[in-house]
Length: 258
Image 1 (cartoon, rainbow, N blue to C red):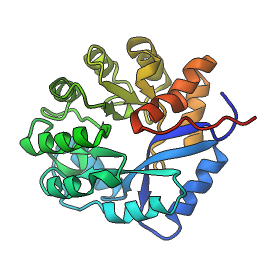
Image 2: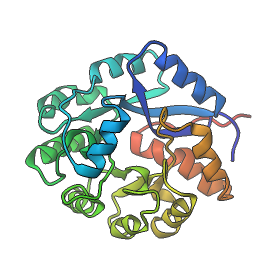
Image 3: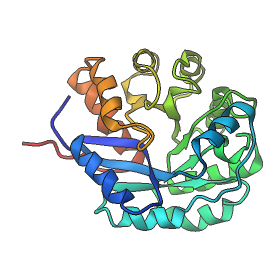
């Protein structure tokens, strides 16, 4: 790995509670993370989330994207807000606010929709106009699988999509095969096994793999240790840890320590 403050975390969350922003920034400092792409977190409790992942269902809770925007705005440019959209309620809101954000997140697990719905297409049209990357965590049900994301990405070849967690499970090698030929889909590494990160690098190439932590559900030190165990070359490490994220986010590469 390179020196401190050269890392960009492509996926973490802020939960609306006192001290959350300061705690995230302290954690970033302690782990050499210069910037982070941040989505709203804590919308539903983990038991309900697990139930909806397995059994289906929908929560109508609204992500507080306005609060997220304010919290990130007070971070000195270190926290880059993603708009977490419910396709059933947020098409017009995202359209009106897109210029203030750095990306779009879609969560079938929370909001219970399929990726082939017309309102999803409307959100993607806005993301395309705003040049936003679109982050999606796929599930195991029809309409929300990696194959469905691949179909969506083929329909929008000029939009950058990112498959969260390298797939539905920690060992989703099949997901990597399904997106291998879809060049505008990258993967984010939080939550998956080390072996899957290795497969992602070999099947997709280092330009399509991005470090993410899933903070606060996962500590960045754990995810960085996973990457360290792969003994990546300096060039591959820089791509995974910062360059790929900066390219998708339209950000400058963090300065390395002298």
